[in-house]
Image 1 (spheres, rainbow, N blue to C red):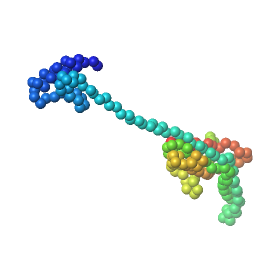
Image 2 (image 1 turned 90 degrees about the vertical axis):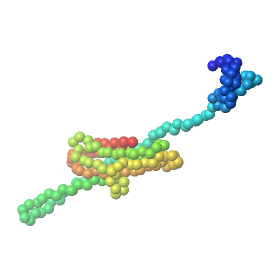
Image 3 (image 1 turned 45 degrees about the vertical axis):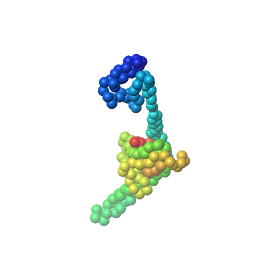
Image 4 (image 1 turned 180 degrees about the horizontal axis):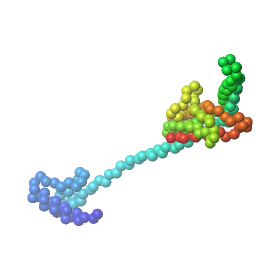
Amino acid sequence: MKRNIWGIAAFAAALTAAVPGLAFAAAGNHTVDSMDTPSAVIDVQAKYEGSTDTQVVYKVDVEWGAMEFTYHESAENKWNPQTHQYELSVTGSWSESGNEVTVKNHSNAGVNAALSFQAADGQSVTGEFYQGDDRLNEGLVLESAVGTPADAPPSGTVQLKLSGSLDSAMTDFSKIGTITVTVN
């Protein structure tokens, strides 16, 4: 903005003469105090503020085995001397091949990987996840990959264990359910 510095200087000189000891200072630290210096030099200041915006990037690998389970059923005829009849006692158990799910966190933030099993329609099978002998309740909590080698990210492995029974007509591997891994 252009101003008439002579008018301002004359006004300042007149006011300074009328009120002894009064001097005008522009914003900052400069004063026009006589007609010998009819201009004011005003420093213009600036500073730089930088910021680095770090975005969270998620990359999570989920790896799993064959997920093949075999239901073994054994029956035993037990003689009941009270009824003079055989009573059939049936027990079942599961064996597995490749029942592991591994989650690897390559993200620059921690993640929680929740795992769930849903039986297919018509199946009376339930599934639970274990880390060793401990049942997994909260999901896999994995730290950030910041500061870890790319080939050794934070990871966790669980095993799916099945319970229930399987129809004796299923003599070939068939889909009995699904696993869902949800990363938060």
